[in-house]
Image 1 (tube, one colour):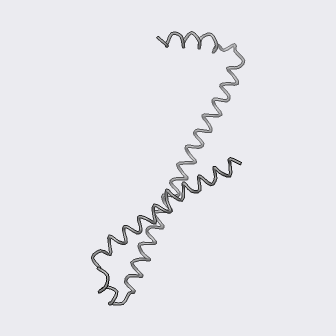
Image 2 (image 1 turned 60 degrees about the vertical axis):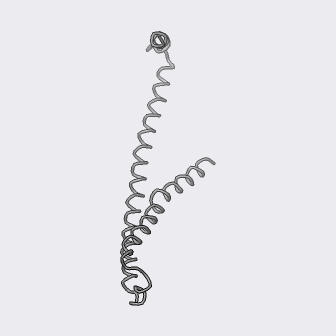
Image 3 (image 1 turned 120 degrees about the horizontal axis):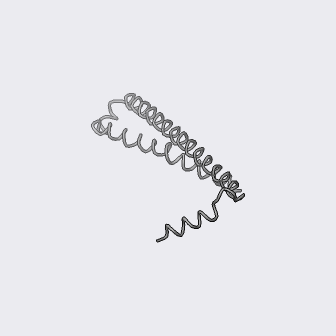
Length: 117
């Protein structure tokens, strides 16, 4: 039911002789280009923070294991060495989350705040 009304309105107002159509087409193309640019920028932005968080997690796991291996024997008597792998995994995941998505969101919010003024 709505299709014939829309098509008659489009046929009436969107003819090629209307000078507003050229201006609307130009503005529409600007919006499309801005959308494509934002998509590309956001992809690289999130990919960068993903790579940084993975690298930070890997470095943390290596440094954590090195510091555990430097401990005295008495430390292993007080702490359960069987839970060491899960402890390293849990803490490195927390660091990856903090340096990845959360850091990206904070930077995005700060840039939006600056751009808003």
